[in-house]
Length: 238
Image 1 (cartoon, rainbow, N blue to C red):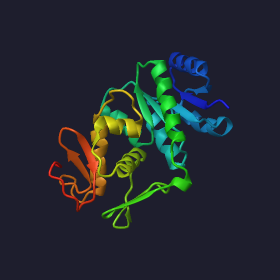
Image 2: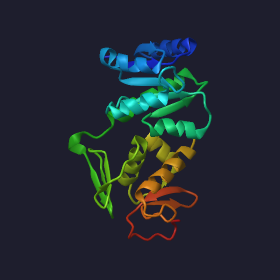
Image 3: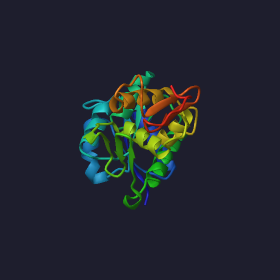
Image 4: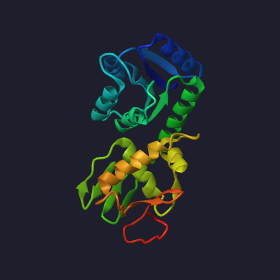
């Protein structure tokens, strides 16, 4: 069956452009023009993915993301924004968006991003393959999407959790920012590596006793980041 995509944008020219190209790529597409209409379409249409503009009437894209995740709706979201500030993009990702694109954009790149998200979902481990990691005082449970320090639950955003889980799966390995962009966001191009740095900083604030002298997520100078147990020494770390 065709994958269903809901396009949410209040600019008719952009909606029509996206709809035309997505249909050409083989997707079943519906379009709405405000944030509240997203929730009216969830049951009758059941989208497999939502292309969501940030600036919308009634409910903006951030509010829509936040409400969907609050309802435990994990439908993938690609957010569209005319804003260039990286903090606006991170706000979208931290509130549940899976990816973002800045206007103006190439319809073919949008399709590539959508295909990457569907590939990533298909590659997610099944329950039988679920994993848990115990590293020092840190516990990460993939299936339950739980993070604990000394048995106390730590609240992470979806992207913070995915980043931490990716680091856990590659524990002890130095990962470049580009590797993290590819592994967590599935970016196959030279993306904005500041996204990685900001999420690493947020993770450290939440799981480290002192974010300035981290025990778990270490910076490897001129390379990237590495997750290790606190009792492991490495003179190249900072």
